Image (cartoon, rainbow, N blue to C red; front, side):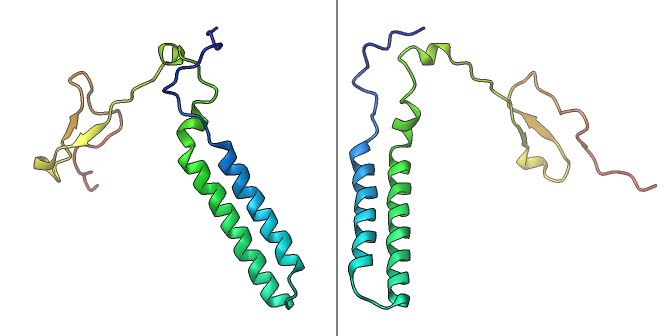
Length: 123
C-alpha cells in the first residue's frame, strides 16, 4: 500500500531506552528493598512507594511519547488516505438566552429533530 522503506526525519520516535531504564530501575529498587533488613511495616511502605513511583514514571513516559506511539504504525501517505467525519455543533446564541434560539455553525444546518425551541405547555 505505502512505501515504508523510507521514513521522514520529522516523524518523532518513541524513546524506548527511557522506558526500559524506568522499569529496570524500579525492579532493581524493589529487589534492593527485599535485601535491606527492616520490619514488615516499613518494608511494605517502601515497596508501595517504589511501585507507585515506577508506575508514575511509566505513565509519564507514555504521556510524553503519546504522539510518537500514535505515529509508529503510520506511513507517509496515511494523511491522504484518512477520512475524517466532521459533525457540526449547534451553539446557543448568547443574546437570546432563555428563548432557546440555536445558531448553527453552517447555514445549511437547522435545529435537530426533537429539540424543543420553547417551554412545554402545561396541560
